[in-house]
Length: 550
Image (cartoon, rainbow, N blue to C red):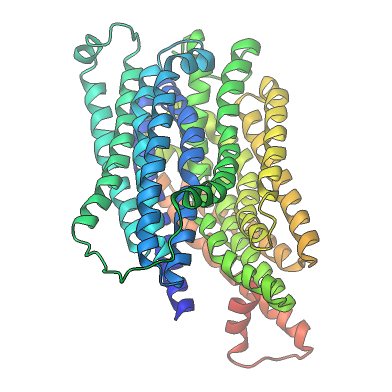
């Protein structure tokens, strides 16, 4: 029953992650069309300071609360569960208030330091309350996840996404269409796009408030379970210590992950301001706006598309963690090897065709999604292609990080991410003066390639297992065939005058068929070699595809 509950919970989280990312794209893409490259630089500046503080305060909190709640429930300590919830809400409410105030008071200095002006300070200030709302929401999500109830988390994510799309886009659109009236209330701001970006950020803050209120409504309709004088209760100090001990390492790792966004902001704007931009820019962009235009386009367009697939494959790590932990603890070497290969192959099977397809269809995808920002989209085509190998490396790295935690190497992901961050910083400083935004994309790919290599080596050495190379070469070969088929289909559509949407659809269908067929044939061939026979049973090919590949 526990296994069924886990599978059901994993599916719910996976579906909610896909829905949340879809809503995020539905918010970010029209927002970029409204703000343009320069406006997105103000928006991204606010996110760059918000995410590290948010990650440190919130990211590990749900995990810590869920683990403590699950442990108490297993021991029948129901009153202890409520105590954990109350103390976590109290402690992390204070943490959230401190984080919100920190962002609010650092808004202007950070804006001046990052971009040389204070235009983005309003957007930074508008996102500050989200840290407090996020802390409350994280405690509530962890509470229900600890009780193996994933529905509140999934529904709160949906509520958060819907509010973000509705409120953020409406507020941004209202400011954009009433610029003269709005500007009169902000005499210190000279660019209406900065106010519009702040309005879009306000939608993010309202969405985090909406998620928090979702749990407040749930509590109104939740009956309190009676307890019969439980004596085994953790003290407040023990609960606080356990929460911090569990949440802090995860939070620090998340901060390191988000440092790449700050590195891109500082180095792209700084290097282009100092060395100039070597690429071709659209007519009408003032010289002083070039750094903000390039950074806003790269962060708002190229990175938005780049992050679509990794956010989904991130759920594979959560699925792999209990399997690897169980096999490691019981000494099941065969199960450990099988689970490892299964998780890594699944990540590769998903990410390789996605990366190849996005790389081949970059012009069509960007000009379709960002139809109103053709100049920004054109600037990001080559950058997006440089990012695609890095996307595959990142997708495959997520399960490895989870498996490292499963075998007790909890500090390894943090050290590896620090190494990747150093590579990212050095790569940006070397490549941006030569390649512009493409240099930032290339250094991102280099960063995640180093992270993948280091994490895989660390895991195989610690677990004392070897990961076979051949299945991954089959996936890579099939992915290349998929890309060739997609390019052919897109080219044919272009010759006959079909639009971008038709070309993307045809390429996806044709490329997908070739990809699946190639995997099928390669897996059947592998089964022939394994069994040493010239024929297989009627059901063997189907079993081979799902067992050998997935």
